[in-house]
Image (cartoon, rainbow, N blue to C red; front, side, top):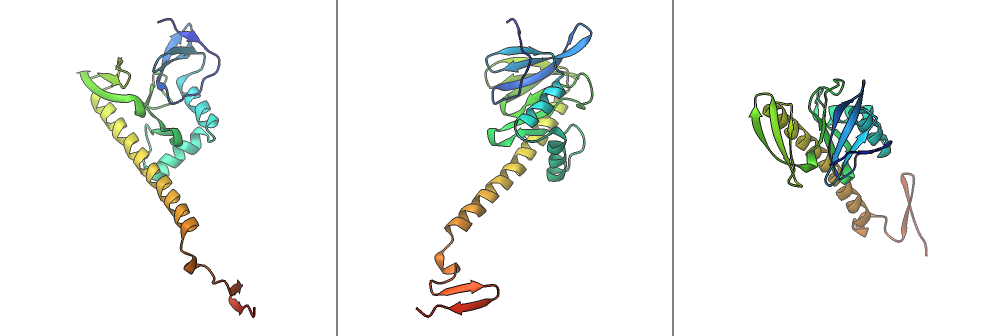
Length: 190
């Protein structure tokens, strides 16, 4: 399949992974979607950062949020857009040129090829070999799953709390003939 060159790209629910590729003397990104492949003149980390901004946050904010929520400090998975289940994890330190970003949502299974290579099977029945140990893939999948779980728990808790506040029984509110002004109750004389 010939790669389509694009100028701008934001990861989306169809993005499976973004990997670096040498293009002349520069590092570009090869982007694999469920049914398409693209070549971008930006590095994978730049695409991840731009995608965070596209979905209303910034990369550092997402990193700090992950650190606060689950306590990870290295190879931190990123919740690019939790509402659309867009969670990506890096295969190595994001500052390293060879770092590949993989979508947690699309990983179906994996097989160890050798100590430094893992075959990842994606939900669309495609498989790709990555230059990463199987133990690193397992660790990153587990860390990303934990982040997803913690974040979804918080979102669901707030949704339940909002629902409760909107649907709470009227008995909990002031009765029809009592109005509250500050700390003093005043009875209506009508």
